[in-house]
Length: 109
Image (cartoon, rainbow, N blue to C red; front, side, top):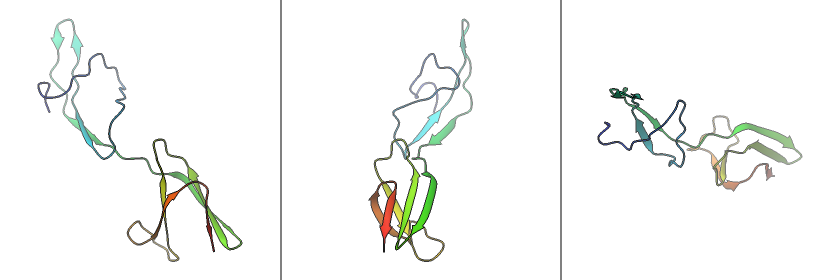
C-alpha cells in the first residue's frame, strides 16, 4: 500500500478508530504527518485482521440434572454457539455443537 493507492483519511489524530469494518477482513495502514510545509514520508505499513471478540466470563454452574452456562455478551454478536463434551479438551472440531444459544443457557439432562 502507498499514498497513491490507499484511501486517505484526513485530519486523523492518534489514536484513530476506524468504524464500519468487516470481521474476517484484513486492513492495511500507513501514516504520514502533515504541516504547513507538506506531507512526510509514510510510516512502515501495519495491518490488522478483524475478528469478533471471544465471550468473556464464561461460567458453568451445575444443578440437579442440568448445567447452566453463562457469559458476558459480545458487542456485535448476532448469536452464540456452545460446544460441549463429556471428556476434557473440548474444541469446535470435537465438541457437540449447540447453535443459536443465549446467555444463560441451561442444558437439561
